[in-house]
Length: 462
Ligand code: 9MR
Image 1 (spheres, helix red, strand yellow):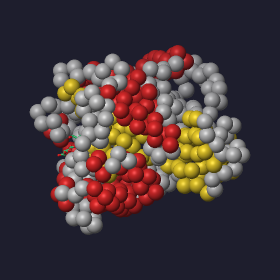
Image 2: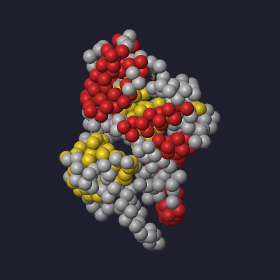
Image 3: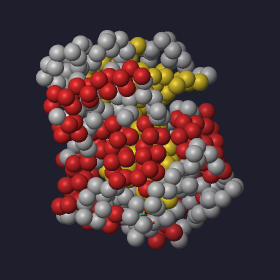
Image 4: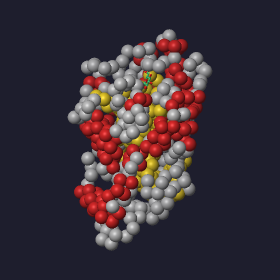
């Protein structure tokens, strides 16, 4: 946990103040302590999302939709963007289910994790019967077509799902996809980047919850991709668990983050009697890793889960919050807020003596927006992550100018569109991240060659 003593004491001070002036009953609903009352709002305080896998067929169920709308800020289509759904016959694409979910997300201000472009399961029958270069061509066409259809609308794609073997080999899983050549994964990532440069591109897998042979195999692949400039932005940890995550769960996330990729918990569900504690442990691990961008649970209510009878989710069959829900909410609320990006010395908590009506927490920027850049550099290249934070008013669009030192050049980017690649580069929001609530943040990033040490950035509302 990265909770600083300052934020701890501020939170304690504020909650004591609230409890005495407003009465305890209000504490849970207010934001003055940083204690948000929904998963999505709680996660947003530290710049993260909280998502759920959603089935298009359930969008007519009002209990389901009410919880979805209230609690979640990210949606993963549970099956609707898979290969068998989107290309049931070779070259004939069907986006009806995927579009339904995308529209539901967009109309309610949520983002979408695309799942999954290539996976050895849920291949359409025609692809299952193919091999070799013919299959390779069909695979790449599939990636290109689907990523193009959703271009600019997807926060992150699971480009490749579950390509590594279980057990101790640390190698690839056998499949007809794998038999087209070991380079199929990087070819898929390059095709996805070319089709939708704004989407983050993830590799996603299960049984990768600690440092083990399988996660190390994936780690080595990501490291290799980064060193060779193969576009990869994130790694998804499905985290289908029974009881507590392994003791090195956080350390495992961190070692991937240290490679310069985002990490995401993509399909969380936890069975067993220790469920509430285990959910808390997973959430605390994510919020302790700066590059852990968010958590998605694989379904909403226990009755929505693929793990029939195991009740592994945060809401019971009637839609009531379970103990595990409170564990997650508390862990999200305890995360260090990320808002004051520019370390404009958050001066001593403005005299909390006189109980002046607890208005919104003092805003980091008086107006407009600010941008801060964090760099992950290696010899000859870098990844820059830029955090855009709204000032005292919401943003309906933003423009960031970064000044790159000479010799540095942008080669790819995500979640923003740019004009120019060297020197002064201007970045504009894409369709899904232009709206930023007052005091909240969004991120975009880019990869480049050369050294970006000394980069500066400015932000303007547009
Ligand atoms: O939850 C999905 C279920 O409805 C499908 O029948 C199943 C098909 O294999 O896939 C489930 O989702 C899986 C996800 O796409 C990838 N990781 C494992 C998930 C659970 O099996």
